[in-house]
Length: 281
Image (tube, rainbow, N blue to C red; front, top):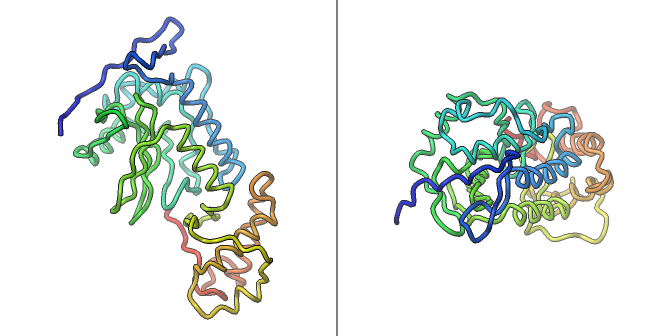
């Protein structure tokens, strides 16, 4: 396996943006265009399980505090420019973007944070659909934890995202637009089910039920938590609260918590056992 080394950073135009020619080997999207794709998807997530007030969107000139120096010299000039134009969610937020996967707020990172993160993944290879990428041209946008937790990596030159399942498989890189479109579709159809302070449920293999389910029916099950009936009942509750286009997150979360822990959150076992796993913040 050959080492392609660091790919050249494209020259900046007079207005600070980058011109791209797909036949020139330069990035096919400018930092501003990449940032716009992220803003669009993050804004969608802010209508579901993320708090709109925690979404941080850069000015047209980007985050002034993100520089080559603030990144500890670990990122190429072009990657720094991309970092400056990405949106972020406040690091104090508890929502997750995928299964056991928390978005990084890189506006809060100091040079030492970037250096330590680079050391952790020093031996990791990053491959786009075209070639191996220099780590300086790769941005970790979300960190996975525990088995199958999702790490998400942005390859700034080919504008692709790698989904890394911790202690399992690393999936092939996908164009940013396709990755976000697929993730949005999974959320809209509740194939991915987020929960307040809970681990996101992967439910792509759980069939849809066409008849309504009563709470008595779901509570009468004798098998352990996370049956298809449990998952479909959560879907039903979420849709009752407007999922996905006018979702009342607080109302739905209260309904789920009242069902699973009728004595109050954190009071212990409910009708479906200890049920929905809490997330690591």
